[in-house]
Each structure stands twice: as C-alpha cells, then as structure tokens.
Length: 343
Image (cartoon, rainbow, N blue to C red; front, side):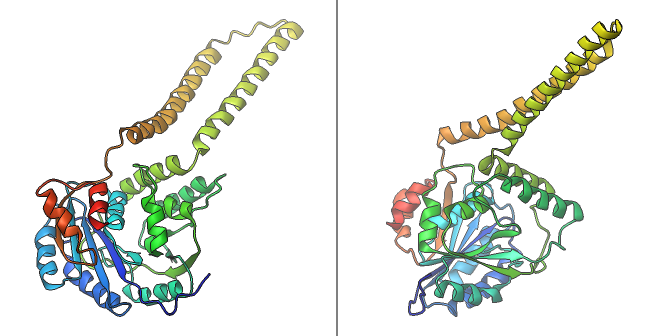
C-alpha cells in the first residue's frame, strides 16, 4: 500500500435518508464538522429516497445554511441500494464516505478511517462488534445469511460489515462501472476488491424515531444478496435431485427384491400418494428458485435506470451539475444524465 500522507483530498459524504426529517437537523451538522476537520474541500450529499415526511423542507433550510450540503430527491422510493448509487454517481470527492442518516454511525470514527486511507488503504469499512440492538431471531438469521452467501463463493463478503465505509475515488469508479440493476452493495464492495482495512465499531442508538428497515426488509435484501452472489440454491437443487433419484432407485430395488424373494406383493397405495405429493413439492420449489433467478434476469434486460432524480438543491463540490439540472428543467435526471453533468 502506497501512503498518501502528503495529499489534501476533497471529501464527499453520501447519506441516504428515508423519513429522517427529525434526525437530519442534528446529524448533518455533526457530520459536516467532522468532515471540515479532514479537508478544506468537502460536500455532504443527502439522498432523499422518496420520503413522506418533511425531509424536503428540512433539507431546503439546511442547504440554505450550509453551502457544502447537496440535496438529491429521488422521484420515488427506489430502496437504499439504489439511493447509495445515486449518491456515488453525484459524489465528486477524491474520498467518498458512506453513512446513515439515523445517527447510528459514530462520527468520531471518521478521523481514524481517514488516517487508514492516508496510510494506503483504498477501502476502510466498519464492522459491528455486536448486534445487541436487534432481536435474537434477526441476529441469528443474519449469521445464517452470511454463511449461505459465502458458501462455495470465491468472493467472501465480510460478516457484520455494512455500508459505513470510506472509499478511494478509484473504488467508487469501479462500483459505478458495474451495470446490474439488482444491486446488493455489500457484495459489490467485496467483489471490486482493492486494499481494504476493517475497523470495529459499536452502533449508537438512533437519534430520533424508529427504523423503517425491519425483519421483512432484511429478508428481502438477503434474498437479493443470495441470488446476486451465489448459485448455491441451484446447486442444492441439483444435489437434492441426485439424492432423491438414488433413494427412488434403492426403494424400487427393495420392492422388486421383496416380491421375488418373499412373494409378498406390496400394495403401495399410500407410498404412491405420499411420493407424488413429495416430488410435486420438490418440483414446485425448484421452479420457484429458478423463477427468482429468471425474474432478476428479466429486470436486468429491461435496462431501466436504477433511479430518477426529481429535485436537486445545494452546492457541494460538483457545482457544474447545476448546469445539467438547469438544462434538464423539470425533467427527472437519470444516472447517465447526472454523470454527464459532472463531466
């Protein structure tokens, strides 16, 4: 790793937000103060992922008070993964930091992450020490997910590592070059590689309100991650088919042998009915797993944009984007239009 001690980089911080109007007035100034201690050239980009509260009004007020703030409002709720990509597309800094808007990511950890970047790390990611803030069921399912997604996979996704991380510009460009629409960012961080350093942290309590990302959202994200980064379900179906075929052949050989040896004719009506129901269930399960993969292929081939931006406010580092927004008028901005405005 090549040290970067003598560099004075520009720093972008991307913060996706969904119904976080109560937290933004407290969290954002704290992050801005920490960023100002790292560099003289900073921006804090807030991605409004279709919030239904007063996020727009709060951000307009904050943008008027802090020229380093950038507010991007998506045309609807696209999900956190796409909101993160919207922020990465808009970020112009040499260093990009990802944080949550709920105040659970400790801001005092930023200087240590920046120091690791100065010492040569391309990615510095935070790893949770515990999951005490989650239920026992959710914590157990999370552990099971990492076991399944890493099983037989050449690219290992670090367990308990979330979106809280610092990345060099070349890592951001690598992520932006990946074309898939069904994005599982934790897997993509691992897939692009680069020199990485892990830092332990303990999530803080939410500043205000309750999380909108519960067990249901976690299960949906886990399914996306497994289907995007593992073919283990397909291999499991193959192994299941082989084992059932072997059992069926063995059972058939036993029935034939019993008939010729003992002369006892096996009625087998219950066996036939149970066998038909069992194999029908296996077939439907197999079709369902295949359908999940095919459905994601269908989403990919449509090539729709990952997100649309309906409103932009604030200054930030990429001031030239304002020209692109002005030229587009009231039209929603696509990711390609946003990148064109930054060029």
